Image 1 (cartoon, rainbow, N blue to C red):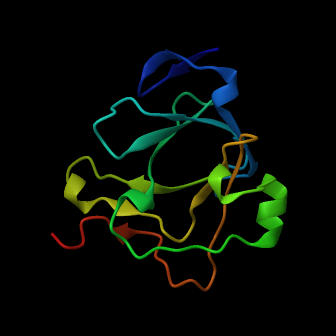
Image 2: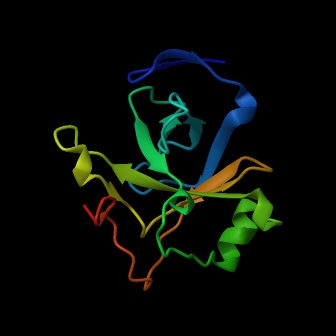
Length: 143
């Protein structure tokens, strides 16, 4: 499948790599199909590209690759909705905000992670209410 994107130009993706967001990304309820792109293998960042809107791509990161104390409990209804049968089928990513003028001010949305079931390509964004996590946690806090 060919996909015309603003950020990456025309790319070809396999339809088997498309995730269906059965729990939409907050504010983007009209978009349910996304693909994870990794244009640069030398960085921790990936991109969540909307299949049906070539102009929309979110920079995402797996917090597990960072040295953060971050644990989440996925509610039973989410486990059921995403069809999660094992921890091995889970991929948890977080949307980041990278200011073009100051990349050192990059923040991570720890409050609303993206949950992917890599076995059935279902995904969703959940809000960890009462967790104390921040929507814009400074990625380079120690700097």
